[in-house]
Length: 398
Image 1 (tube, one colour):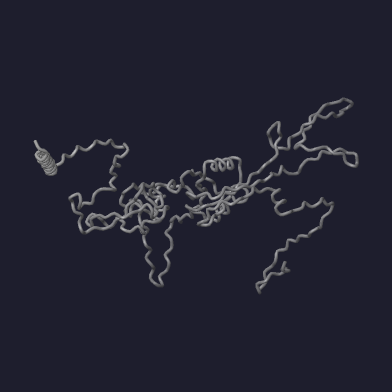
Image 2 (image 1 turned 135 degrees about the horizontal axis):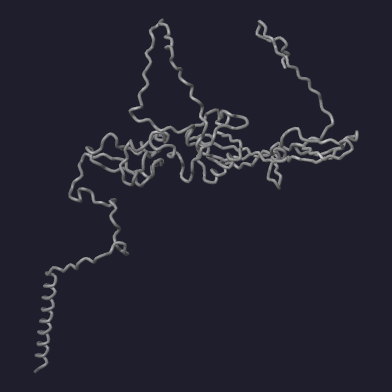
């Protein structure tokens, strides 16, 4: 076989192989590719999609239920808040709802919600309505939840008497002229009386002293009991006589004052349960008398309206340690006063406890030396007599 024949055969075989490869490629492109089954993914594993919380729900158009064209935006809460919480703009959003499902109680503007108080617990995604909010937290204190709605988190409420025992038995000074109301902030002033004790008996000084003395009665010695009250000391006079010197008044206390700052007032006076709706009868409007008609006299036997008594107690929100301090102060008979704070003053000021040493050191008061004499001041008790011109006789202008 010649070389030419061999070359022709090789060419024919190569063309045949190329033809077969082309046929296989064309057939492979025309067949549909098999889709592998989806892999099962356990929720919570890495790479698994997060659970659907409702925020990523497809719109109604994509889900097959088209959204009505007549919709309105309503305010919803982005998080769960407890009752009494102040609503802020960052926890509010607008959601679209069909107009026929939104009544007049639903709020449609976030500006109407910011600064309001939650009347009840509000949950995430809940549509906000006007009956769920209150302009002032005091509106729901007496009618729904009681004073607990005003207690800040981490605080407890304690009742404190308004009366100050020494200076103000009726409580008018302590309560800042009865100008304290629910929601105010006050500083509580405490004055303690410190007195010296006998270390052995743990009783107030001075102690009593009882002596046994011997007296002579008709040339016999008789022992008699003599009690000296209160305890003092014996001193020999220049005349040679021995006397017993004793104090003329009781022991004076050593007063120390301190302050509890920025306590919130939860309630003024005794708490009263709210009346049912049937008992809340509107007050009748008085009918004006005709001009010139005499004023009618009260009926015989009519009981006049009693003047309400001023409140006698405050309920204060305090931290637990402050509550224990205040309770101890009341137990030992400390004098309690209240100072009213400004409406936006929540600052805590550095305050030193006040006693006699504080006054001497802070104001540079020098203790005067003891004198053996003084100036005599004459006091006159003159009752002036009014005259016809409105002046008083005997009035020298002093």
